[in-house]
Image (cartoon, rainbow, N blue to C red; front, side, top):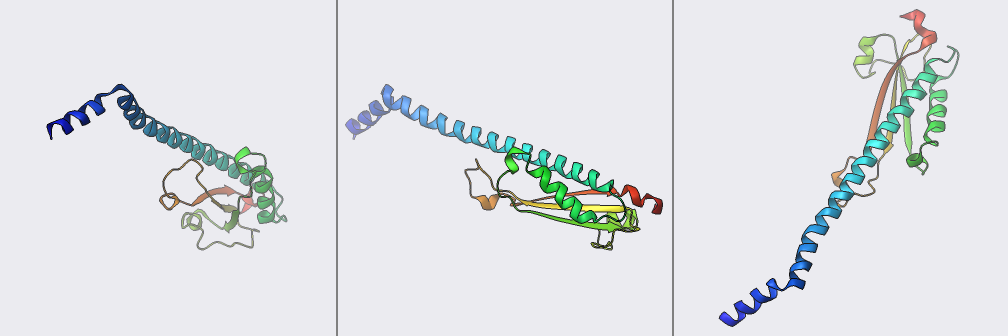
Length: 164
């Protein structure tokens, strides 16, 4: 028994085994931390790019004439801007909806009492964008990650401002 214990202790203390153990105990967590940081940077980049795209598209739409189809123009402007950003050039499904409200109270209630068709005479617009998110560097199961990103922005339709 004593000989077996000495053999295992000498095996553990040998320099090649010790180096291999240290390497495996340090390298794997380092790689996991690096991949987690890379995924976090990717999430921040995509999130901020999506916010910028949504804000620019909403702003351009809010400047349209009152007889324009705001929803169609917003969808077109959003898809045009999505193609410019590097991480959105893939085949990403983006769902867009717009609701037009009479007053701020209806807007605060998440657009429940607003129209999704008629924008005339409704100065407030609430734009929703949903996109699918697929992690790239995430080592854990994807069920742990929120799969849908939802963004909302409220804008005053400039040519409907007389109604405020």
